[in-house]
Length: 352
Image (cartoon, rainbow, N blue to C red; front, side):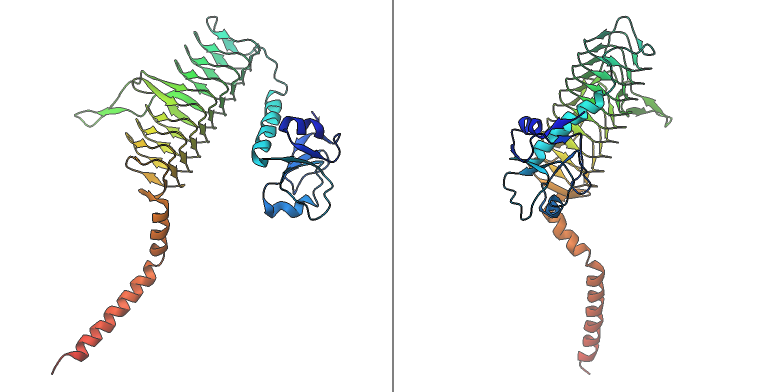
């Protein structure tokens, strides 16, 4: 596919400087771009590349004031990052749908009692069980499993290897990346008198609202009763585990390898860095931001805090404490030295 600079400027509502007929076929990094690519500049550190890049089109802010000639056609926008996200989304959609015909592959299994919406594609070896409902304009890639009575909204992309087990609900415009598992039983056992463990059946489900993305190999467990709930706009990275009966608020971002234990409620617009651990049965206030590898062991009631450490404390408190912690060996050496000097002083100052 290709698109002209004028078409790009129209999509973005940007101001065009240069050749409106310049053709681009793909996005690229500014330092690597070649003819036919479009690149972007949003960090002053990369400005030198603006004067040497081979990109045909360069996305810049309206405030960009070049100090040297720029060969690329410029498109000036208010917010480079937001404009780039819009363009990459369009390119991504085109690439994701490339070669996908809105039909059911003859090698897929779709139960006669399942319902498939118009313009939806189902790939080879996918399985859609009885009572499942899939909306319009979805792409269900190869080797996807969709359990009985599961409902998927419209304009969703389900990548290869995803398992969505029985009675789960997926909203509109959701993307599930390869090998994500939605609706497996939670980790619930009751210890018996003889020390053995008996599994507690999980008869709830998982509800994923609209515009949610779930990364590769992420696991979201079904509730024992009721629903594990992922609210609209949430973005979940690869290798995240969300346990049974957890609730995730709107527009929350969860980075890779986060683990959230059962029945915890995460607020809206929360950000959890990579490898954060959150204990069970807690409440995390709206707008909380947790630094990578931190541990949350108690509820966070005050909203919009930045936290760090294990167990996590205020971000600035942790930084100050860590500055002291790094000096502990030197401080210990100095204390030992002072104790020796004090001991010598006491010996020499004793009266005869």
